[in-house]
Image (cartoon, rainbow, N blue to C red; front, side, top):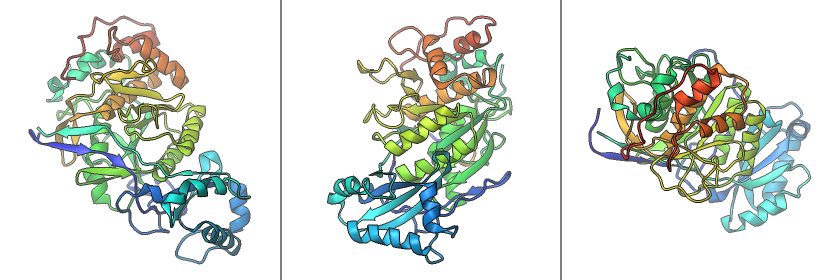
Length: 431
C-alpha cells in the first residue's frame, strides 16, 4: 500500500459532450458506449450547455428511421428541426442519446452566449417538439485518498466492518446473485479483489480502456461494496459475492474528474434497462430534473438507489431525490434537517486501488458504498423489498447515538428473523 500522500477526487462536469446511437451490451469483455457525434471531453464548462428531451414518437417522426450521427448527413426533417433551433436561439447540437427507460430522446445543445441560457431554456420549453429543457449540471464526489474467520490479509485494517458488524451479517447473506451498478469513474477490472466480481462494464465517456482500468475513485467504491473474500489477498467487501456492473459516467483528471447530467443520464438509463438490483451514486451536485426522473423510474422498477450526501449541496442530486437512500459520512456534522439521512463509516476506509494496490480513502462516497453493499445483502434475502422499506429497515436497526451508523448484522437479523447480534463497537473517530 502507498503511504502518506493525499489525492483529492472531485467529479465535476464535462465541457464537450458526445453522442452516438446506442450499442448492445456484450455478455463478455469490454462494453463501450462512447459517443461518436462529437470530439473528446475537455475542461468543465457546463454553463454552456442545455439538455433538451423529446418523446421517442416525435423523434421517430423527424428521423423517419434513419440514423442520427456525425458520419452521415442528418435526416432532412430532423436537420431542419435542429437547424431552426440553432438559428433561433444561437446554439448548436452536440449530442443525441436515447433514454429508453423514459421513452425519450435526450439532446445536448451548446449556447453561444451562456448568459442567455436560462432565457433560452424557458423559450425551448414552449417549442412544439420539445418535451423538456434544463441546464446541464455538474456533479462531484466527496472522496479523498490518503496514500499510505477470513484469510484476506488486510481484513484487520477494516474497522468499518466491525463498526457495522458486516462480518456477522455474512452468515445470512453475502450478496450472491445481486447486481450492483457502480455509476462512477472507471474501475480496475483486473484488480485481484475485483476481477471475479465485475461482470460487465460500459464506458459513456471515452474509448480509452487503459484509463478506464486506471481510474481510482470507481475502483475504491467497487472495492468497498464487493471486494472478494477468502481469496488470500487484500480485503473483504460488504457484499463480497455481489456482481458489479461498472458504468463509467465520470472521467478522471490528475487531481479530479468530471461527470454531467448527460453522462449520468445515459448510465442511469442503461442500469435501469439492465434491471440491476442496486445503483450506487458516490457523487453529488445540484438538483436535476432529468436525473430525478430517471431515479423515479429506477425506483418504480424496484431498483434500490443509494446516494452520497455531498456536504456542499445536501439537498441536491442524488441524496435529495425522494426515494434515494441518502448516506452521510458518520463523522460529518449532522444538520437539523438530516433526520432522513443514514450514515456509515467514511474516514480512512481501506479499499482497492488500480494495479493490484490498496489505499485509504475518506469521504461520503465510501459511506454510500458501505450502505450499497448492505442493500445488496438485504436484496439477496428479500428481493422484493422496496427502496423506502429498505431505507426504513436500515434506519431502525442502526446504532443508537448521534451518528446513527448503519448496522448490517441487525438489519439482516430482522430480515431473516433468525438470531441476534451482539452490541457493535461505537463508531470511532478514525472511521
